[in-house]
Length: 376
Image (cartoon, rainbow, N blue to C red; front, side):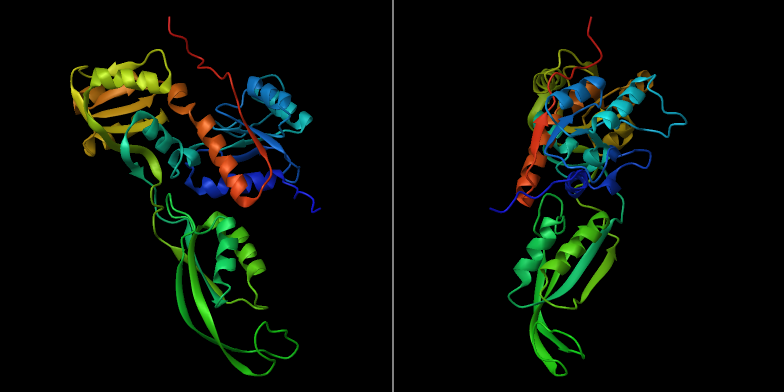
């Protein structure tokens, strides 16, 4: 019986990066492996919103070797590292207990099928698109020439390594049939033809798009699956922006509703006891912008695109006054309430991706995380 393949922390990080590329993260952010040995094995992981002492306790009790959180444990460089504050205690304990801590933060916010798309779906905002689109770059086109009949095998290997994803679509490729020629030199072992003879072979030009951070793994898998001894391939930098990625989302409700009615729907959808409202409760809203966490910086862009309402958290007084001036309603549902849905959604995506890749790993959702703020 074939033994189960060993899964390492670096495999888990690669899986997360394929779904939510770190190049999507803001420059000020710190995403990816925060603490832990990349070569350590992992069988169970826990997903949480915050990397707190409580969630670390829960992960350890559940037998997890990794904690995947939305908010990073380490945001800025430390001049000293001592167990005298919460971050220090968590870091010391994580190292001592052998548990890795990994963050998927603004890369998860900006990604297609990421936190803001999940928030839009939860609130009933249809056909969402990025409110502030992602910049150019970060993509490559890989072109490889494959003998006819082997193109599916090579393509599947590249898909499994994170290639061929365009927005919410995967397994994307373009294929063109043609004729390849070659002559095998002395000491070669050609897959087709004979040494010293000019050969003509039916080949397929296979093209896929991939994020630059996945290029090493995709090329390695492609070379392993390719039958040729020497493989001809091109890597072409692209100036394309990544479709469906960017900060926030904007879309439309199925039908206009009053601001007061929609605010009640938001409370129910996000299971939050209260929220703050800016604007006339009786006004009709249909075009809705949103951003999980702290998204008031997108207010003017929401106004420019004709949004009736911006749903976010952490709204400041002067931002509320600006919304009044711009004629855009605001719903401040809180940082916690607009982001905690990522626990279940990310856990679900990681389970599905692990199954697709044949990675045997158990994904657990953190329970009991609570908003630090209380309504009194």
